[in-house]
Length: 511
Ligand code: ME8
Image (cartoon, rainbow, N blue to C red):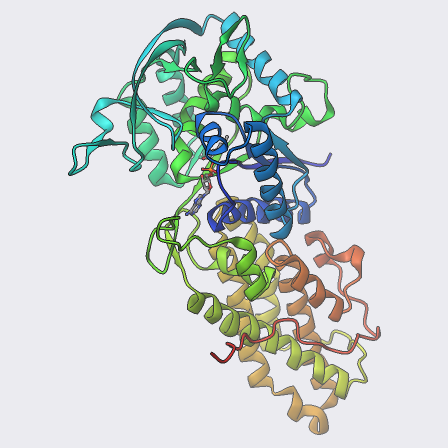
């Protein structure tokens, strides 16, 4: 039976244009989805947009548009961003879809029927920017006396009737979940943060608002709209067909992995499993969170004018180079800095030089010295064996790294093999063997093709287009590009296409 894998991105707020931070989380989830498909899994990959709530309502008003019209416009920008970044989603969900409103209404009814929702009065701090409630003790005071959330977001005092979710009843069940499923939250620094937050005690959560209208009405009490996070988190259930549990997509539930940013781990690792437990629905298997990108060391912000638009980066450097950079430059859970110099260095050193040149050198020798015909394997020497063994272990090593969302380790593993292959070609010097030992020359070139094939196959999730073009040049048939196909050697004697560089050097335009 094929195994299933359900992976999600956050659904992005439609209050503003997509930037590189959104693109990053989506690329990470995409690499996961593609790697699992490469490994033969049946994958369901969900992304989309979070369209209700006060933040979106305010942004729409500022743009002079009705919330739905505004949401339609910005949601289209997010979908275009996903397409531009090569995100291989199976469904792009929007929380204003009728299917999602219905699904969320049913979830609410389940929570209410189980006795976990009651009517009360909320009085406290709210940050619209974060769409989050904060306790007095969490706030900081700015020099001018205004109070701000720990995220720096301004807060306002809210006092209104509200429905509450009995979050306090889930402190013990949540702690038990973290204890019995140590991989539920990653990385471990975030796990510790969540555990100490929950140990500190949970208040019941305000889950409806009456002071604005842009949300899903509370069933039976339309003066209230549902709290946007209850609505938003439920996208993961709607995405696979909830409440119709006989929908074939529902077989993907529980989600294998929610990929999110570190800013929203609390919503995903505390509120979401609590809602699900309360509704009697299985909880997701893992929530993994990425660190923050800053730009040349500075926080990205509209006021600094340094917000990086993903499309502009792709125009400048090409999609695969950008995807590679994002996955390679920093550990997933850590913060990191983007700069053009850093991108150019990754392109020129690792893509153009280490990998591109290796392929180009090997394939041009086959074109020139073997009439473009793929040589057969020969009995391996010790040096051949060492390199082939390193390549043979790569899939397993990458798989383990990807399962930990350690994308940079997965890529480093590939580059260890590529660097070893560069040392091998320099040492074996096949160009010098043409006259002295043509059979050995052919054997060496075949080893290089075999190693390049492994690397290109396993790089497809990161750089789908370039890795695909490299596989074309290596003569790998379209139906033999998944990880299982690596067990079958390429047939010798086939004619390879004329080699063409896949990873050009980036040459800075003269100012
Ligand atoms: O929070 N570096 O949506 P959002 C890395 N709608 N990642 C970044 C980033 C940066 N500088 N900036 C943003 C929401 N991100 C909710 C989610 S899910 C049920 C609802 C990424 O539009 C990161 O993944 O504010 C972060 O969690 C997400 O964008 C927030 O997107």
